Length: 283
Image (cartoon, rainbow, N blue to C red; front, side, top):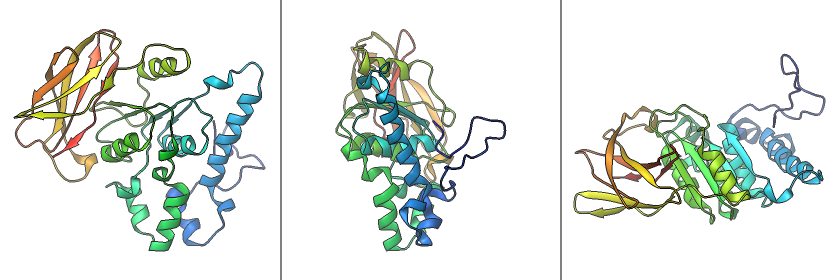
């Protein structure tokens, strides 16, 4: 859905009821200028999502119990807020775009950190997804790259852990920004609304001596596992990541960490190429 008031015409002109334009990140300028909420683009964008859900549910040919939401980049941010505002959705999918960005090391975090304490408090309450994700009880899938320039891996993970529903992770080294994996979103959606088999479900990361491991429960036979790691520090977007094969026995992926590892996670893949990720761990 278009949430900036554009018409489906050449040049994408705005219609007469388009509302405020999207400008500064998380309404930094309007909030600093003291403009009322009804003059904030983000406010209207979330309202547009909720009204779209209501419209879809009004059609007799649409099964209201099978409506989910999927967003890319800023759409992932809006999805992360919308799922905590509108409990009628059955699932949510984000392809980068998350909450806890005020804690992250990207320029989006800088946008929050520039604000005065009272403006920051207002901004977080209104538009930061971390204020809304605890309301979510249905399943979610988050896909991302550990070096995304906009949405740091740590913020994606905190967002996954903030809901009371199950959140699956799909994290790929070298993956482009806001790109949709070919298989996993459809497998995930079908598992929720069609009773299909779910993606592999991660367990907790466990340390045994020099070895770290995680056990996945999967309805599909797992074929391979990999350890993804970086030995770099500094800004998350600038870190160099590596992947190496990991041992895989009865759903348990394990590996010794290379010397100097600062952050790592595991991926497992089944014989049909469907992948699922563990939580990441910063050392």
